[in-house]
Image (tube, rainbow, N blue to C red):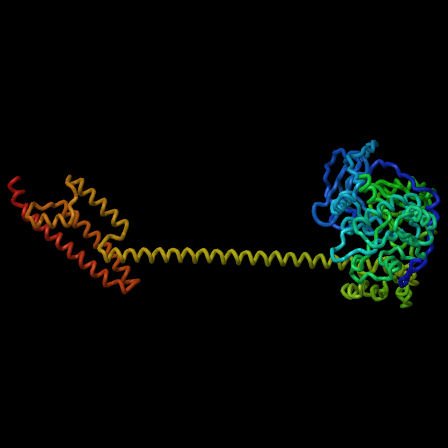
Length: 607
């Protein structure tokens, strides 16, 4: 016999399960409108992939999560997209959210499906991607995406896979009836998940108040290594952490997950969804939901399309408006009152209680705490509900968080036993919400600060790069100037024209002089030779030489001035070069004067 352990606290409320187990699961049919919220899971909301007026087929993907954690949403039947607008959705606050409204056409026409009967021959990542594309999220809790849950961290090997069929909360019988009627599908889904995880042990846990379900599951598990274990009826034994403690004796660490201790829990409804997705290629478009309470004449379980309005299911169960006092979505312990029956069935919906005034009377007015300590005795998480209540009421959220507020599973056991009728769970939910808002604001502020710091760093980097480029340009200009001065000094030492413009101007003047004289250019050496041979002087050539000499003189004088201002060590060289050019100018002027004197009488006689 398998050893079982117990968990701290817990209560035994009235079950009220017999009301909805007298009839088999009934198909709810197709309503006139299906309202599909884009947020049906933990994580990022899906984004619509269709437009108003589009016709879609059953199983067609109509919304997808483009980034982050989430799963897509599929059309539960064929029809026309009527609107994409904000509408009431299942939420304790009665909030509105974005929804796709589908008007069925009555044909219930399927899109193309791709079953994987030979999934064992495929890669596990491919099977996980198929589960994700089928839009499967946890159907017994908060709606965590199943493909992510089936992919634990590499350093955490799952040794025990638990299928949770405890269904401990009063009134709810959806899992009970599913196990009675669809045990084979549950076993098929469990086998697929076990093939993905390769655990050493597979367990189906059922409370001992469900004998028909226990018998059906044991029959379906014959010939396999799957264990069907009966656990004592005690609320909240169906809580993930409590069930793990019952079956293994281990406790999930505070702030941790079951995979931290090598355990994983899945819901029986999730197992059926996985089996249908892999073996039939059917995405998650329907689920079993309990409709019960004294205000309906035919309570029971219905297989409803996702998006089916609650009022449609109530009419199917024979709602008696005169007896209806309030509607509760979920169980009486963890559920919440609905503001309107127009909200739709979503992936995590498991029960609706149409309660009369006698069945679920209005809670008594809240009275002061008498410090009886019954809440602490009933808490299955061994917290301090009294202190958490005081801190939450006083707005001391940090102190409440320090007392492990987020370990609270909101089972409602503390509120159930409180003699002062204090809605403790509502205070805890409020405190958790405020802490999440503050954390979101801190994250927002941190991101804004990071963006500002990144901008400042970018501006500083750009300024540094600009300054570096300026220094490089200045350095290049200085090097070019130094090179130019060096070339000028070398040219001055050789008596050559360094200034390019001056050299070009000299060449132009020489060409003009040649054209004016109509004779070839005469070099300085040739002029000297001609003078020595006492031939007739060439006046245009001498004028040209005088011009060149003056140009060189001006250039050397300018360079001398620059050199005196910048480099004192080159002054002597330039002064010698200038003196030499002075001598040349003087000789050219004397030659020109002698030539003019020689030609004067001849010119007069010609006149």
